[in-house]
Image (cartoon, rainbow, N blue to C red; front, side, top):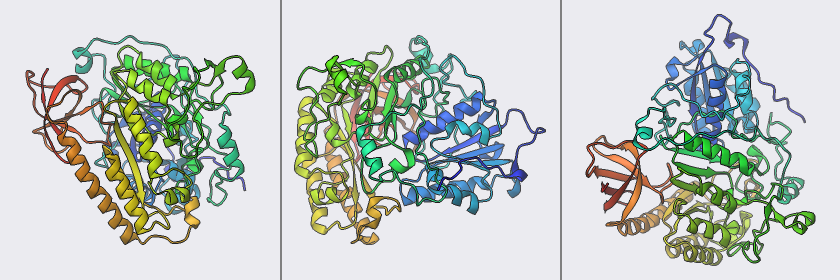
Length: 580
């Protein structure tokens, strides 16, 4: 059944001509960095359309909640945020006249949101970011020829403070900002391309669509067509990350068949942004004062596999993956005519090489690699450039081959240890982050012990553990032998305790080490300390470096880089003294 995606507005709450021509909009952004970029795009579109962004819910004429729907806890947090923002509406005694819900929860529960929460005036799905203007009652603005990383006009956060883990500082520095005064101003550049909705796809995506991987027929109100939206270097954004840091989403969607995950249904098939568009966006960000760029996507290591062949073929033997879970190669396959012409598709290694050479970019990393897509060529690109983080975030999900088979991922502890060993051999001092799911249906005590043994053997630097969440629409939902919640939580605690001991030993080895750090500002925990990160610590997910001695400086500037020495360690965080 085809479901209309037309935005619905409650007449009693609609904005009138008598109201301000520049309404104030407040944003709550939940979930992952990919969702955060969507929020930044919507804020940019609203700003371009004449709205003003406010960090204070009580001052907003319009409130937007960009939701997450990955697991049960994320869905509950999203619903709680919607209900909390509803308290600010005129009908509840507040100022706001319109409440908009956006993001993944809309894709999953479009009809239920509007039926069960009458305060919601409009919904905007993951494929409808540009519809935020219509939802807010604003006209679509004329295109701007310059890449628009927009200032909020305030040094305050541009998102409403709700969650302790949210990044809240507005990072768009003005030309007179202390950061840009501290260093030399960077040159400005012009954009190259617009919003991309071209119908590219990978063969894997086409096959899995035929197999029903992306089916949303059982979801009430879900749009019949899959999302195809991709923002570009010409799309306006208002950054909400700290000062010198920014994310760039290089791809959207996912084709993998993982049985625990509904992200492909929420986000659509995998699709890459053009190489030139990403480079243009990075140049514009650098010109605005960004010095650290983190590339994100559901699987960044698939980048380029859907793009047209445009680059010379690799020398023989450079494309093979390390210990591929299913024995396949990660080489970018190209049509016969393109191969005959000596052309191939661009890949993540090409993108890293191009970005690493940009003047003014201090740090570069990418997040979320698929195990069988980590090629020697990719690792060599990481090892070759000093400004690329010697860091791999590879969500392995489990180490038991039996569990991995039920997850439809493949692999085993032996293959993963081989991959890690080879990666560490190519990239000295490689920092490894991964995540695991405990309590997957049918997980036995023996399979859990196998996972613990793997964690002990692999000596992973950063590790996250998720309790299995039974998601309707995911393949695993129909599996039997569900693990009791009490057992799942017990296993999660055991694995985290094991990792805590590993991390504590690993952090101790940092004591005495000198390294470059990026100053973020005062500590989240106390005004007596400042906090920073090293290149080996990704924003928001890894530990912090706490600064208790400014060394030769009377004060520090957020967004500045300094040499520091590690003087002490805790389980996950480090303590440092500034050297210069």
